[in-house]
Structure formats: structure tokens, C-alpha cells
Image 1: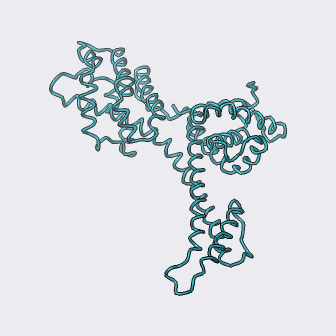
Image 2: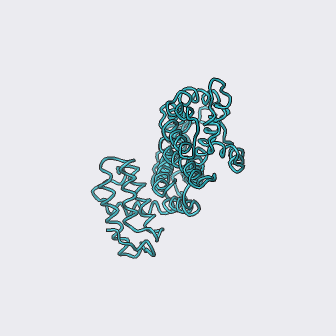
Length: 378
């Protein structure tokens, strides 16, 4: 299932991508200003390249001094063309950033939705394996064909509706699925042993389905490679998809009825946390950068790893905006994030910075906790 740590990681990755897009927007703005002052080779008027170069340098200098100020109006330059180029550059830079912020927030949510789609795809794959078993006349696949869990997958109306609504299909990969069935299922020793049983029972049916999901499908390098090529996030999301698929089968055999798993224990609450964390980090990014700078005097804020900068901003945003999450829980969670996604020295750096920042913000009353957030985790 999806947990808060996974959501923090996905928010961090999205915010990291957003920062990179801002850098790209900055570069695009600079390039457009430079182009504004290149000699126009098609013009009938006499061009003064030296003067144009001077104006271009003036415009670039003004833009670089004020590009972080969305309301800035350039006026009184040595030439109206400088004012126009700077104002256009600042406006377009901030418009692009705003559009990117909306775009990345939307894709962040869509990516979580795609995890659930991958889970549904795995259930569909099990059905397709059963279909191939039914059409295979070379041997008797009865035990698998009549496995109650597989039968439940095939007959559940809600699942069929989801397949149709979400366009869950392997139609473009039927040859690949057929090859997987031949190579990894039909000749598998555990599958052969299951088929050889004169009579199955609930325990044996459940045991085989568990083996099919956990070892035959999710531990297969060929299937893994195929899914990685189709989905850049597969390596990261695989454990969640595997857990959802396994729990679906386990729940069926324990409770005697089929039920789809939820993406998390409380997705509406988790989704709100996910979006609020992203939004709050975006809103106060520059404010936090100044605060971080005060506590990292021996560090150049521009040279701190971008991942670490994003994580620090996220942690501060979480400590301030989520009153029910204890400060120590937040710090520990982001230490775990940087251990996996940043530099070897990041763990110690992040721990020290967040400890200092949190103590100061608590003493100033900026961080206010209530309920579970008051728990002392020291």
C-alpha cells in the first residue's frame, strides 16, 4: 500500500523537477533577451552592433537583478527597448513557472493514479494467463483454470468495469504475454506440481496463487525489464503494486470474497497531505531559502545539493503546516529520504540543519503542534 513516506518521495521528485524547469525557464528568458538585441540582418535600417551589444548587456543585467520579483516594472533604462525586453522576460518567466507549478501538481497526482492502474494490470495479467491455459490443448490445466481466485477475477463486475473505464489492457502485448505463459508459467516446477494434484483445496489454491504472484511474476527478470521499459517509475513502485496484488489474493482466501484493495488506508486524507505538502513548499520556497541561508553560513546555498535544498524546504513546510505530525517524525522521515536519494553526507547535514531550524521555529511560535503532533519523539 501507498504510505506517507512514498508520498513524500514522490512530492520531492516532483518539486525537484519543478526546480529544474525553473532553471530552464530562466535560461530561456536570458536567451530571448539576447536574441532581442542581435542585429536584424533583414532590416533595411543601419544596424549598430556595438550599441545593440551594450543594450543587451544592460537588459540582461537588469533582468538578472530583478527576475525574482514578479511585480517589478523596468523603467528609465537607456533605451525603451531595454525596458520592453526586461519586462517581457520577467513576465514570461513567471508565467512559465506558474504553468509548470500547475502542470507538475497535476502529473504528481496522475502518477499515483497510475500505480493503481499497474495493480489492475497485474490482475488482468492473471486472467490472461488463465485464458491461455484454457486454450492450451497440450496438457490439462484444470486446477489453475478452476482456481477460485482466478475465477473471482474473471467474474467480478466491478473489476470488469474498471478495466474498461481505465483502459486496462494487454492487447498490444498479446504475443509477449503468450511467451511469458510458455516460458515462465507452463514449464514452472511449482505450476507443474500444482497441476499434478488430484484434488486441490483452499490451502493449496492459496499457496499456488501466492507463489504465482510473488515468485513467478514479481521475481522474474524478463517481466521486470519489460515493465521498466514501459514505466520509468516501475522499480520504485513495484513493491506497492506487488503488495496490492498479494493482499487482494490473501484477502480473498481469508474472507471468502473478492475485494479490490485501496491505494492507501485513507487515500482522501493522504491525497490532501500530498497536495498540501507540494503547495505549501512552493508558496514559501523563497522565504525558506533565506531562513536556511542564515543557518548554513559555512555553506553556499547555491552549492547545496538540489535534492537537499528541496528536502529542507519540504521538511520546514511540513513542520509548520501539519500540526498533527511531530517534529521528530518529520525530521526522521526526510533523513530516510536523503539516505536513498541524495549524497553520502546529506543525512548528517539534513539532520543538523533541521534540528537547528525546528528548535528556532518552535521557540518563535512559528511551529505549533496539537494532538498527536505534541508527542515528544526525542
